[in-house]
Length: 270
Ligand SMILES: Nc1ncnc2c1ncn2[C@@H]1O[C@H](COP(=O)(O)OP(=O)(O)OP(=O)(O)O)[C@@H](O)[C@H]1O
Image (cartoon, rainbow, N blue to C red; front, side):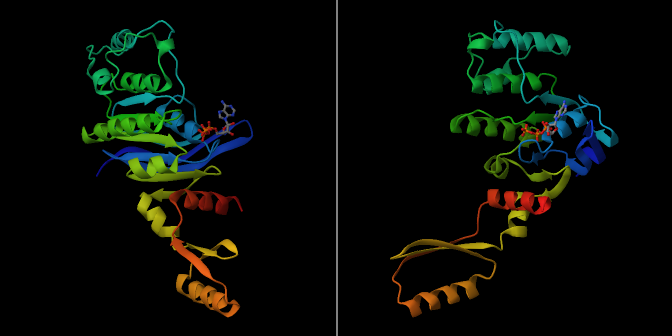
C-alpha cells in the first residue's frame, strides 16, 4: 500500500520550548490513522505543520493527494445557515455546489443559523465543509470533542464511510476508546516523540501481559497487579487459605487500552 503522508525528522519549537523533537511516521492510503497524546502533547502542532498551516523548523513532509481540513476549533458568521455555508465554501473552492454531504451528515434540513446550532451540528457542518473540495486526505482535529455518545457514534460512522470511499483520514484525539473503535493505526505522541506506532491490538499485545487480580473477601476488596498470573494467583490463594479468609469473588482482567496508554506516557517521562 502506498503512503498518503510521509513524515521524517519533523521538528518544531515555540521559542525555547521544543514540542516536536523529530517525528517519523507514514500514513497509508485508505487508512484511518490517529495521533494520540495527552493535552499539550503536540497533536495540533503536528497536524498543522503537516497541513502547511504552521511553519516547522526541520524535517520533510510529503503529501500525496488533495487535503481537506477540519481544525480543532473553527467558527462561521453567526447568521449563516448550513446551506449558505456550503454555497460559500464551494465558491471559494471553485467546485460545484453539492448538498449531499449535509444530507449524509443529517443536517441538510437545518434552517437554523450557525449561532443556533448545537456543538454536534456545528462539528458535522465543519466536517461537511472540509469535504467540499472532494479531498483524498482528510485531517480531523479532535472531531468528536464535546459530542454526546450518540453524536460520537454517528460521526464515527461518517468517518468510516469516508474510508470506504477510499479517503485517508488522519485525526488527533486523546480519547483511547475512540481511536480503538475507529482507527486502523495509532501513533502515540509523548514528550515530543512518537513512542508507539501500530495497530490498537499491537499496542494491547505489547503491554497487556499485565493482569489485575481483583479479590473480594470478608475483609473487603483488594487489587494485585502482576505479569505472572498463575504464580500470583497460587500465592494469593495459598495465603488466604492459611489465614482462613473467606473469598467472596475473584476476577482477573488485562487492563484497558487507556491504562496502557498512560503507562507508555509515564514510562517515557521517567
Ligand atoms: N502558537 C503557540 N505558541 C506557543 N506555544 C504553543 C503554541 N501552540 C501550542 N503551543 C504549546 O505547544 C504545546 C503543544 O500544543 P498543542 O496544541 O500542539 O498540543 P495538543 O496535543 O494538540 O493539545 P490538546 O490535546 O490540548 O489540544 C503546548 O505546550 C502548547 O502550550
